[in-house]
Length: 256
Length: 280
Image (cartoon, rainbow over all chains, first blue to last red; front, side, top):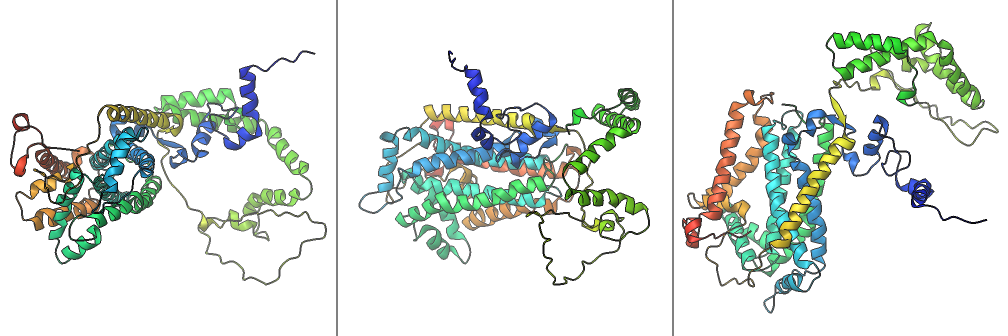
């Protein structure tokens, strides 16, 4: 008897029938054998996916209109993910040290630009993505205002959104210091000098946030921890509430 | 059972659909109503098919299943008939039933019968006051997959491509090593704070740096509690829209001035004449 090797399509079918494949892709996944383009399988495709199930199974038809949301909220979230990934990459090659003898942080920045494989490109993505995120979050807020999407029952989600905008600015500003070049240190000096005029707590404010009276090595370490851990952590908490409340408040607002 | 497998009376379907469409009902709604009427008509005409699967289910799963199935069948009957013993009444009672309290725990833990299978079933009896009634219009809804998810994917893809191309060709700035003794001229904050830095030219730092930012943040958070106008139609929101647009534009103009129209010494310049003093 002559054995014939299975054709690629047969192999694909066998793979998709295997227990391993079926254990990974839940019913309704478009990668699972037997997916039918029916209302039921479309619903399952949303429900049975860890990422997609942030969405409802169905949404109001007008929510698809690009000129209603401009996808700004979703793109802001996407940028946050992108910044997290590129940021983790950069953390491998960066030490937040700026002692008097030599600024390791700045040396590491030069290393990222010159010797790290794809280092410059990833840093560009991180920097431009960060500016873009500040921009898109601001525009998202404007969109929500213009569509009146902050009105009951969504008042609290608007407040959460304002907090998220504030955290986004905080993340961008703390990251701005990390290259430890002239641009960074002086932009931060100018930005934080305003806080020195706050009533009653000017001195305490500077000491807590800057670790001294001026921007220095202590500031770098503090802002690094804020930038890579503290602020993202808080942001993710508020982001979860933000997404959860969208669903609980009845999905997308409108139509106008 | 899949929806398409449900047998229905085609004649009734066509008739009701036409009636509904003539009455000006939306096609989706009309089809739904026609389908439900047709299925009901079919079931009324074929009562024997309805009974067959239920009997098979009750008989096929062994004796243990039978009491539960019987209880389920008994519940609707009991509601119409004289008050029956047992808790089945709770499920069928009308919404206005008085609040019931659960019987106090007796403390007797029942011992399983000899030879009983080592598993248990749960039959939940939900008092009607425990049911949350949600009244929502069905409206015109579409499936998130594929419609919304594809749109999101395209948006993400376009943004990624744009960002990758931009990052390939434009390098992020890295100036010389930080030097606390050498102030660059001009020194500017990051662009999103340049509006505030611009305000610093006109107001006391206390006002520009503390009062106004606090006012902006608190004011923004307070928007939904100040604007109690329930309408979302732009025509009904002229004041809100005008105010927001004015303030937003004000911020944008200040930021643009701070970014491009301020040069050495933070003095006024024309970017096309003296050049741009702005770094991202």
